Length: 455
Image 1: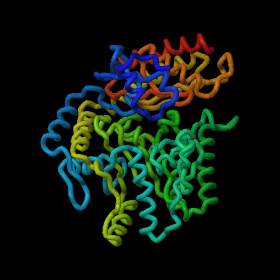
Image 2: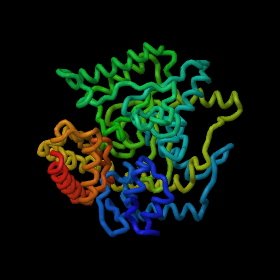
Image 3: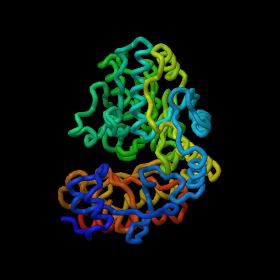
């Protein structure tokens, strides 16, 4: 039953609003938490309660909430040129400047930037570009893309197919048949008894090699992966993993796509996750922190190897028949340029590395203290605690402890996100020692509550 007063924001939300990643039936009963404003690393609900936003919105508000420089950049661009398109040889200054900036910042040499509005759209575009490229090369059979179990690449038909999570497939008739999923590189869960971390990485690479051979190397267009898995549970790859994976791909001349939608612009303690793990992608996808999510924008960076056949094929056909209305939006591009300037000027990548250390150390201490926690993991300013249902006093379905922790954290003024039984933390990169301490205090209080009830 709807417990909210008639005509309240909560009641109207229940009446009119269908939410993403939400149990629509349950929402009719519990309704939303309505956030009204944000300031720095904090947000405030419509009852005046303050929360530390320990997930930066959706892994994305790098410079924090209420950054006036981004508001000014958007306002000035709206006054000058509020919209223009990038179809049919049209362009504008902000899109040109941002394309040049992204290519210059790329972790490896890149040729072109292509703009879309979200990580999902960007990854969907990658699939189309890979298929287009294979046709351009006269290899129409080279269309399969290998992703990984628990990898997250978006929610469009193609990008959700690459996502390796059951909820993104159930009842959507996904994944598409050309999309395959290899081993999830989560040592704590997938490692075998007596297997070292490096041995596990070797096995992951061997599994990939075996899949490529079974499918036929000439049928595989690309392998896609996040440097660190985000929505799949903040999975940091085992030692040597990316080196071994890249050796397999090089053996079969298969393109590598780095999904940097979460990792990009500082999250792992370097500007790119690809730098953290020495990944050399042919295609790189970025979004979220590119504008601190103040405006929807994403980009696909292509090296010359990936791009040149696409150029050739568009010449043969007469056009590149792909594009969306908001691609390279001048307001979004202006916000992105200012956002990147703030990240550079304020040393936020270094701050992410610096503040990530006490955050992860504090979470590790709590994981050791509370028996319900199975593992703490993370790198840079991204981390997670995974609750272990096997340690509960009564049998719990998967996700129950994570949900309980999420509720308890909200009660104690911390917004995180439970991914099943994993609680993910990814605060704004402007966070300081006081903000980290506030998160840890809330986590400790929540763990006490959940342990008292379920431990």
